[in-house]
Length: 88
Image (cartoon, rainbow, N blue to C red; front, side, top):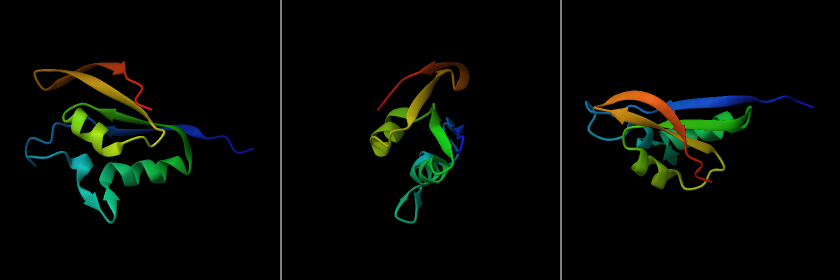
């Protein structure tokens, strides 16, 4: 069989210059991060999305893709220790 490696999508930026989460920008009929999850899922297992700034908004928008979602603890806007949070 085909061996799939884990895929990690880094979506932890706070998007301060843009003013809204980059992960949620529309890309065709989906959001940027949803499209990345779909693309990664065809060749990676599991797909891990690292969230930080705007984590709740991105989690809400993602729903349950079957992806393992991880969030970063932010200390004054600087990422520190990763903490696993299983969403689905």
